[in-house]
Length: 332
Image (cartoon, rainbow, N blue to C red; front, side):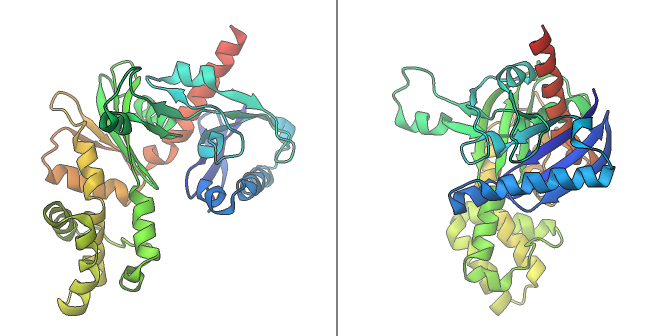
């Protein structure tokens, strides 16, 4: 495989890296994601961000576009709020199915390099399901986390079935069987929820940016348990009260806030925890540490926490696995 540029774009960030084999030769990022399309009503900022990232990578590496084999895009760029829509694929899904439904195109307004768009996934109820609660529960989707899982599984040598949670702008929790096939998924708003409440409410005046400067396990767990007992909404306003009238530091209050606001996300992960399989915690820090701390507090025994470097490149590795399989299928 020649030079590949990987693109991992989510709700708030776009990250691009140039790979020569398994070595990163250059990288670029922009603080732009599909939330911009949701706000603006068009994907202009996404296209601009990708074009700028590709140009920056070419400049860093001293390469020309014709020397790049392909751009491989995982994440939300293939969604309805991305830049090239590819229909979501229904679960169950693994590398082969992702590759079979991926689409290679050229978008001259961005670059002359061909781009492989890897589709997202959707979870649907079985045909004939009439229970409205069950239908709402099962209707779900994700974009990009499947590649992160493919990469983690390969890099960490994960064998057998496992549960996995990948907190970020959103949290995706899903079950993976012994063949590396995703069987179910559940979504929480996670980082988006934290951002919304910390940036657009009265709490903005008592929280830092970023919210969590230092993880304080005792205060984190306190907030989580308080929300379990009293509800998330009544718990969040306590973030301000404990600073004004109970002499808590900003860090202490922030940990309480994060523990409380993530209460339901953690409870969702607990739904797929089993004693006979490990639970993998990936995603970026500090949310990875937060989730691991709260899951351990809840008594999850076989907990595998991904290290920083593996977490950093997992999505890219998984996307390149899908790309290689796509090329193999096209040549078969």
